[in-house]
Image (cartoon, rainbow, N blue to C red; front, side):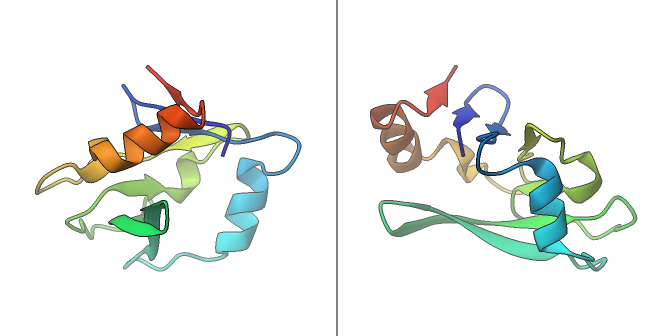
Length: 104
């Protein structure tokens, strides 16, 4: 990951190492129930999220990334359709800021 845009939840990918195309290939076929991912900071789980397909009507109570919307240079982690939004957890934002990976 190159950076996280705090205001939008956009994750910019490092073009020399990863691209959205590579990520989609690694994910493979995502079922209508989605594919979970974990966001960690300094080895501590901050939140659980899910990769979902546009054809899914499932709305998990966690942040989501729609696979079809992953772009070459990055992807959006959207807030949970229900529940609290853990994307702004101070432990995560502090670690990203210290690593110069957080942009407004």
